[in-house]
Each structure stands twice: as structure tokens, then as C-alpha cells.
Image (cartoon, rainbow, N blue to C red; front, side, top):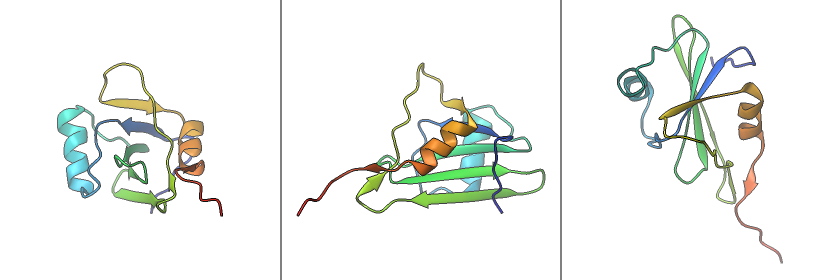
Length: 111
């Protein structure tokens, strides 16, 4: 079960958008491309190219968890803007909450 709070360390993977991937592929990216070893409490965040789906991968000593949130076609997640050319960024708990709970209206239909 995915359990996240302000005590976790959160990392946003900026160039990883393949939502077909599950645990093994994401762990491969973390190990090989980021040279990181998931530690207890680390949460890795990936987002689809169309900003409609987000996944959080978590590690807790003995197991991995996956949380996914997907908006309907009229909403999307806000775009994460970053400085520099790193492949992943550490983000704060308040930014994770803002990202997950603040949908952006993609289209407004007025009748």
C-alpha cells in the first residue's frame, strides 16, 4: 500500500513519460540512468506527455508500491517547470500536494 507524507523524499523524473512501464522498468531507470538506489521512503514521480496521468513509485524497506492518478479529458496536471538539465529533481511535500490536488481545466465548454 502506498503511504506518503511529508517525511518522504520526492523525486520528479523529468524525461520519463512512458506510462506502459511498471516497477521493473522504472527501477531500471532509477538504477542505471540516475545512478540512484531507492531508499526507505523515496517516492519517484513520473507524468505522461499529455499531463493527464501521473504515477508515484514508492519503496519501503521490503516492497514497492505504485499509485496512479488520471484525469478525464477536460483536465490535466500542471506542468512542472525546472531549471537546469538534470534528469530528476527533488521536490517538496507541499509541491507534491499542489501537483496532485490542483487540476487545470484544459477546455471550458460554455452553453
